Amino acid sequence: MVFSTPLPHVINVVQGGSISYTATVTLTEEVGFPRREEFSIKSADMQPLWVYDFDPVNVSLETIGESKSSTLTITVPISAPTGLYRHTVIATGYDDLGNEIIIEAEVDTFAINTAVAPIPESRTVILTSLGLVGMFIVTRKYKK
Image (tube, rainbow, N blue to C red; front, top):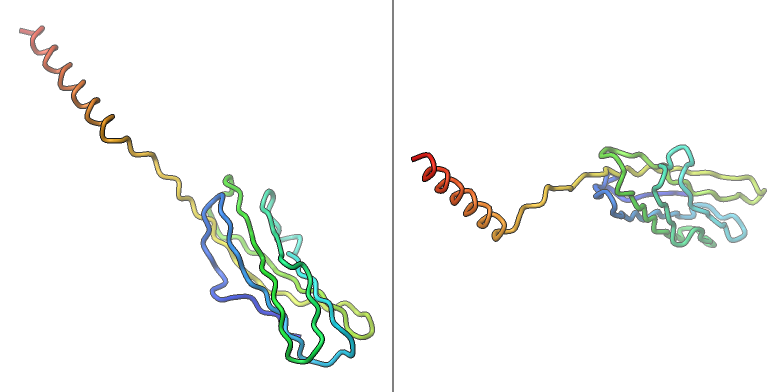
């Protein structure tokens, strides 16, 4: 069986945003029965408050060369520090003897901070400027 994730593996996402990856499994050998594959994230790679959602969570493969995919959506919390986060995607299946077969692939998410100080609207800037000019004129008159 072959398991793949998209290239490039590193995708930028804004804090509070979501990103999607497609994970695909392909059956490369005859197993004599439908092989069920379940997708998950390696627990050691899971980040607190992040949401990981596979759609669908599992697929069945029946014939050699057949491929099926699942979309992994990762939602990054707004409070996530900027940086690179590594996630190991796991496809778990079973052979004809019932033995568990685990295949891993890695995807990386780079959380970026797009917070920008708000720019005041032009009316606010104009009124503030006029107020400062007015104060300057008044203080000059009182000094004379």
